[in-house]
Image (cartoon, rainbow, N blue to C red; front, side, top):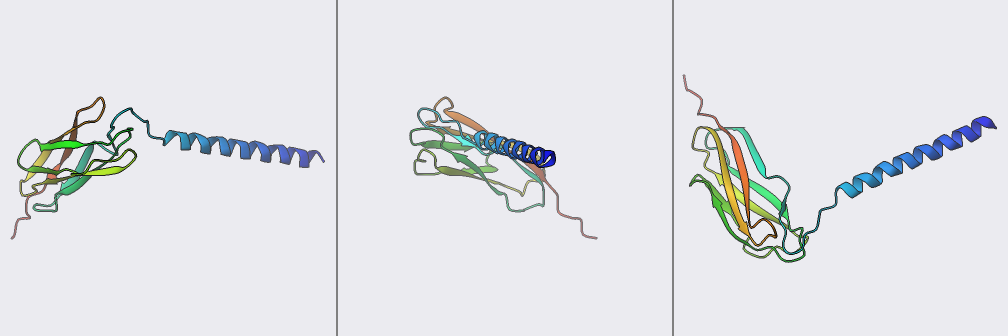
Length: 143
């Protein structure tokens, strides 16, 4: 009889501990809301890593409007002519995702770190700096 009671108590304690951990994880993934338009990026830096000469230089910065009003991106500007961003033309509704595309000219050999400046109506951050980095390898030497 003692074994059954002990087993039942351990089972209840185990289930309670498991449920407590699950609810904490769910709360951690909530996005903080802001009054007005908001812009929260999944990542603010894209690392191309080591890529081949003339490889595909297209990447995407994904973000969500975590505000209560539509987000309007008025401008995106690369730090040089080798970094060309693309901007969403339509306003991003509250809770909706958006994408800022960026294309790096991979015909330039060597390490690079470039920025994209995003101008918007986001509350508290009218400009946001995004970064791309990586290394473009030279073409292999033919023997």
